[in-house]
Length: 408
Image (cartoon, rainbow, N blue to C red; front, side, top):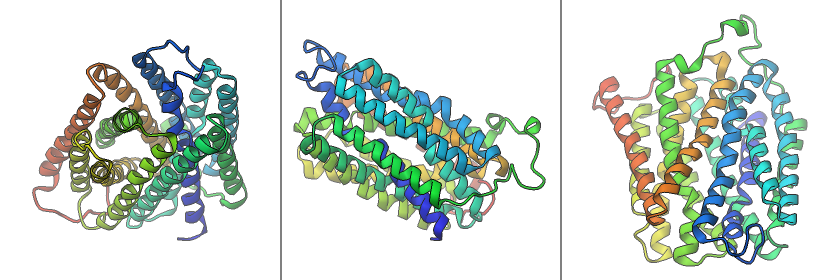
């Protein structure tokens, strides 16, 4: 990788690490009856509802801010917009730490919304990857960014769980997340070169004639698949820690170790997706990823031991990252070059906004038992399987045809 690719890699890893660092803390914090964020007599179901609201406000912010930040990066350049967004992220984590320290639920919820509005880092990095890569190299670079994303899910929760358990309670991980975001900001500001986007270069169309992306049929299909696929992923992960606490009585640090156990196979899945992208049509890659997702999510509630649970998690993790490769490349390949920032912002907005779909489904399903959330996640993944299968049979037949350099 060259210097720019390395900085994009580190930007994605640090962005996700900062976001994921408090993740093993949120569930125990809301379920802890001795902690006064919620009244001590608050019931378990109500606590889970508040937890889902805290999770859900971040994607609301992403849905509102992601496409807008992407559109700004198309016109003003990737670097200045990324720097401005990261400043907002650092401030957001500091406010979040203050809210946890003072046990102010309202400020915690407000800061989660603010974080979502500002956190367009991954979308802008993906748009820049599309700017600097050829059609043949794009799948490799996207798969490397997915590796970085999953490395963030290892580094962040592991550090966050350790800080919560051994470094000063629930406030410490949020301070740590702010420090990581500040490091990310410094790396981008001093190390990332300015890259001219297609919307800024010679022959760029004026804003008045830019396409409405949602009107492009192929792009609209991949956006729908993104919503359904990430709906399954978010439903899976939202109740991931709840299930481990309920079934296996995991502590924050143990939850962080569980995050590592699923992130390692996800990194392998990202690497594998990059290797097969030049050999299989994108539709078949999506089919493979979502078949593995369906199997892993459906079997998640079966194991009675952590060893068997980790095996099931590995199946789901590989499937998730292969599926992510298919949906992200599908969106990028079908969007105009001059609107890559807007398209990837919309992609990330739907990816994170799908948490609303997951929260709504989960709130209904968890009333019958936490295990039903995983059945719901598997059904959403299965719906993606059916769409990819039908689309693959119609467009490329039953043969496994190599992916062309043009949009699928």
